Image (cartoon, rainbow, N blue to C red; front, top):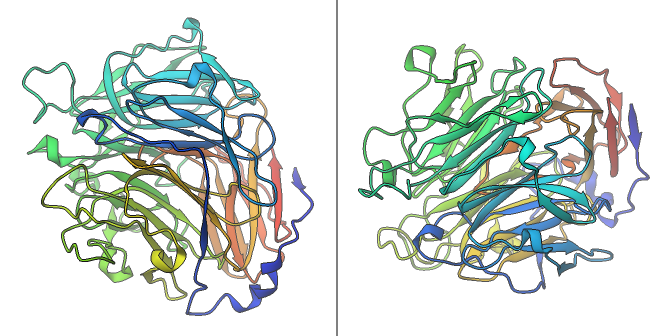
Amino acid sequence: MLRSVVPFSVGFAALAASVAVAEPVQPLFEPVEISPHVYDGGWEHFVGGGVAAFDCDGDELLELYAAGGENPATLFRNRSGASIAFEAQTPEALRLIGVTGAYPLDIDGDGVLDLAVLRVGPDALMRGLGDCRFEPFAEELGFVSGNRWTTAFSATWEAGETLPTLAFGTYVDRNDPDGPFEACDATLLYRPDGARYRAPEELRPGYCALSMLFSDWKRVGRADLRVSNDRHYYVRGGQEQLWSMDPEPRLYTADEGWREYALWGMGIASRDVTGDGYPDVYLTSMGDQKFQVFDPEAGGPVWEDATYERGTSAHRPHIGSDGRPSTGWHSAFGDVNNDGRDDIFVAKGNVEQMPVAAMEDPNTLLVQDAEGAFSERSVAAGVASMARSRGGALVDLDNDGRLDLTVVNRRAPMEIFENVTEGGNWLLVSLEVDGANPRAVGSFIELRIGDRVQTREVTVGGGHASGHAGYEHFGLGGAQEPEIRVIWPDGETSDWRMAEANSVLKIAR
């Protein structure tokens, strides 16, 4: 069933017809004042610093739950009206110390979003009770977490299961007396057994994960687990990983097409940029950032590097006098000017005082043109912060069809930027399913304009310690009536239907 909400009236829609040109519309953001919140702490909080964006009070506006490290985590209630506004209002259950990041998902299928909270210390699964109230899930769920240092997370629903499979990526083993170098901890995989979780499986070797993502990369109805690792601590032998989610998980091999690839991996972003229907990836690093295009003809897990071809390396600061390499953290795809082409945001900042990397390292906003090339636009857009940025969220905070930006900074206040770009048309889409997996994680949304199709995989994970659960945003350029369909997690495909530009569309199975 398709249900279209009354379209928003937006002044910038009149410019839509002029958007689909080679020179993209320059995005523009304005800062939003909020109560100060800082991610801080010692060396165990050099990494992390994420934010979860999700609606916890049922008004369809996204709240923000920001990690604090040694400071308490903070929940910002969304009070947006004519402009974006937030109020710091944290329930006691979420006022946790040692939080590195958080991801929203509906674990128990009751229609209320829950939170997976990553920590230095025991991780937590917090059950949403409505009106932004939370409590730890009951012991009957079977989830038990140890004294770990968790820096990555992803989740998926495997076939026939009512509970999601959860993956927690750990960093250095806090209990290894010979650490921290060459002391990377394992990835912990929690698979359900009916209505509760089994003891976690340790996926080894672990190479100090800083981002992970379950993705159905080959479009067969099953998600595998991609892990991006920090080679600063694995020193030798480590690489990026792709785990095949067989009954006994295993790493893909070179014989299957997987290519050994090592970088200081910080974040993963996934989106079909090329238009072939398969997810491409953007990987952040200390040094250049990597844009890799999936090769569907190879028959295996093969991504080809397109970093310099597309202009996405963002390997050094683009303003200032510091010419040392950049350090990328959270990354996200999103169409910030609604021209129908995805752009890329990268949060940047020195780990702390690493002399080999830039200290003045502004955040990056790469805007895509009609030829598929990207160019740096963060300064003119107003988002080139010089703080030590970590996690973030590129999401629509006030449902006006424009992607806003939240950035969590280390030892500096969190920042929110409202998108005021006069760009093209847009569509906000949500999926609804009765029972388990009510937000249809694992679905693919296809949006067709003429002979061009935008493909969106619904996932939980990626980024750097930051996740969101809200509307899927599509930029439409000048299109007024795009067509849309859904490939549901079990492979059933809906018919193509017409949608109305500048509206919110809720699709119920």
